Amino acid sequence: MFRGFNAIVYKETIHILRDPKTLLLMLVIPGIQLTIFGYAIQMDVKHIPTAYYNLDGREASRELLDSFENTGYFDFVGQAFSDDELTGMIVDGHAKVGVKIPPDYSDSVALGRRAEVQVLIDGSDSTVAMQALNVSNAIALRKSFTAIQERFPGRSQPIESRPRVLFNPDMKTANFMVPGLIGIVMQVVTMFLTAFAVVREKENGTLEQLMVTPVSRLGLLGGKLMPYACIGAFEVCMVVLLMRFLFQVPIAGSLALLAGFSVLFLVTSLGLGLMISTIASNQVQAIQIAFLVMLPSVLLSGFMFPQESMPAPIWAIGQALPVTYFIRILRGIILRDAGFMQLWPQGIGLIVIASVLLTVSAGRFRKTLG
Image (cartoon, rainbow, N blue to C red; front, side, top):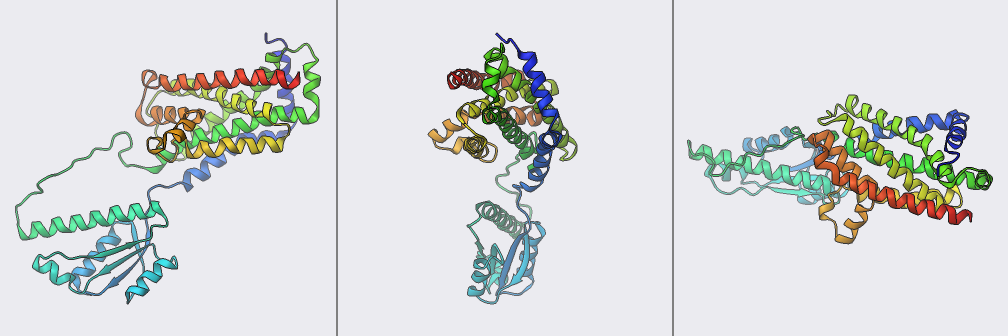
């Protein structure tokens, strides 16, 4: 069934080693991408440029502005002296938040009346807007509670929530994003490697020459995939080490379990690249088809956006992507110390996708060359 497998592995390995520049790029690109994007992607927005329009000007209003700045989320970049000027600073992009304090703010606070402070937020960036909204509401709530305690000493808060964040208590963005980024980077790299390896044989006309040799079809496919599977395994080790020692993301679960699921994911990703290679006739077509897979992998896999909030048809597309299951596995093992019993459904998902991809690819490979 796998006749000629060793010969094809040897041929493909020699071919890879003869091009050291490409081999070097294969090995370093995942590390470079993980390093750049790991630092670049930050969900915790701080230092939001903020302008203020203080019509009160007294100590209480200045304390309120200090409360905004002391959170670390707001940096005051300018003072406005009219409503139009405050709005203009947001429109021209100089500030993303504007704080307007009314002239009777200090009097209202001193007399225990409601003081209304207007906070204008630039909604064109929803991430920044949501963070600014939550923090400004929290500041107002804390100020209100402090004022009530000063007026009625000894009274406690009627309802107190005591949340406890599990697995990532400091809520570091890197702990959440970098494991997912490993899945995205590895799928893209292995998919391109495999797709180009077979399409290049088509373009050079050497694939037909291989098919007339005694090498079996499965031996040919398996032999071409094996060297890239070894390169992918090395790349996984490298990016996991970068995650642990460069981004200081602790690994709570079993490394052996992570290695086992990583091998399964590599087989699935290589199958995806093989599928693309059976459709594309040249490397340009392979790139275009690969982009059809790459963008949904980033947006629909749960890497950045929760799948639970997606419409059912879009959610279903996400379930057909191998990286969806691998990201769940990575975050489960690395962050939550999940074991095999918690993650086996994700493994079944990868096995089903790999079986479909390899079966269809093998069928199309025979049909293409027939």
